[in-house]
Structures are given as C-alpha cells and as structure tokens.
Image 1: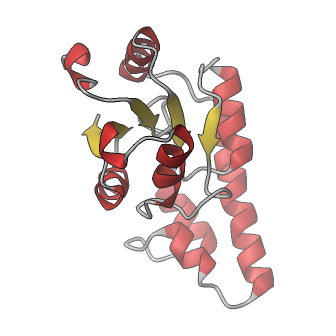
Image 2: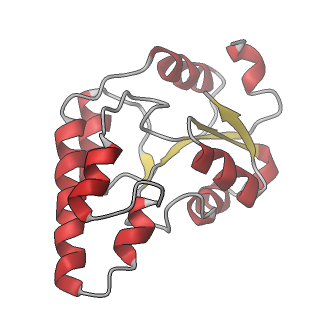
Length: 171
C-alpha cells in the first residue's frame, strides 16, 4: 500500500480501532452465543432490542468482559501505526471512532501509547454503520465530511464513511 498517497487532499483522518490500529482477538461467535444472539445478526443491535432490562444488562456485562479481556492483549498493527505516523507527519487532526466500549478502548490506547486523544465509542454516539460519530468529528474539526478520511477494516467502517459522505480506506 502506498501510504503517501492515502491522504491526498485529506484534512482530517478518523481511524477505527480493532483490526485497524490494534489487533483484536474478540471471538464474536462466542460473544453471540453468550448473549443468545443469532450468528448472522449484529450483536449490539440485538442486545439493544432485548425487552427485559435485566437480560439486557447481563448481555452488556458479558460483552464488556469479552472486550476487557481482549484489551489486555491488543498490540499495534504495523500498517495502522504507519498510517498514524504519516498523518502525524502531515500534521493532520486525528480521531478514533470505534464500536468498542470506552473502558476497553482506553486500555488499548494507553497500553500501546496511541497518540490520538479524540476518541468516540459506542457510549458517545450510535454504533457504526450509523454515521453520527463520524459527523460529530468532522463538525468538531469544522471540516466538511468529504474532506475527512475514515480508515477501517470492516464493512461497517465502509458503510459508516459512505453514510457520512466521507472518503474511506479499507485496510
């Protein structure tokens, strides 16, 4: 990948976290089984739709435990680190938008000394592919969405960027 060309005309870069900046060993099959979510459904959407508040709280706790366990072992991905360093060299504002919870995200960022302080998690805005978090970042930076690049590794990242009217890079 030609990293130098990735940021042509870009005024701000937003990164996904898991699978983009850091490795993730989350076992989504096990997570879905633990909360009773069918394998083909989005786990966060499924849990949010659980009518019983106690069952919903238990499901959120199970997901949180998976995320916290994973956070302890997450390490920088080489390409992610190179992209962040290139954005830094160009003095571009950077942010992270992730479907992770705030606590696991903070652990991953701290353990890897990721130099990005503007972070939005699923507690801050609706989860991707909803574009709200990406649009919040662009608005904070006072940039048009089309001047921002969203870098991610999953179809939800592409969909969120397209829904926000942003450029995207799938890694």
